[in-house]
Length: 226
Picture: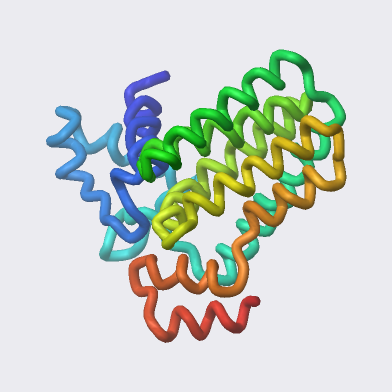
């Protein structure tokens, strides 16, 4: 990778990991001083991130971490749910011994983080858990697409975990997904993953309230999209 690509990866990781949150401004001068570079590679890195949708470059405001409109978020989560459902169905059909072990280990790690009440650890293990299912699908292209959209939605999936009792509920859903995959039940594995990822009703309203500008107008927009 060239310098701009390395900077892009670093900034992207900070967005995905929650160090930079939706609505945060990315000042070119501050970033250049922080990384000890000129503004040119910073500008190139930000332009690359804008292509992925993780940031937006706005007139007079510069670059900010993206906060999609509610209707757009609905569409993104719907697409993610369908990709995950497809991965789950294929994993139930094609599960290998290697992926079986990886899935069991990922679920155990989620259990440990949930038992400790450690949201940050659970978030990291949750990402591993889903990535294992993508790989277990045995479809490389599907895995790539799921990983790409998962990273795009990562800031918003992280916010969801802050909801009361969501950690415990998420773990129970993980256990149900694993049970269906191990049983070779393609339909149930797909449906459980779709329900696990899809954000509807109160869950989506809470997500919107947690975002910058999550006001009454935002909640009204939510209502019109569901």
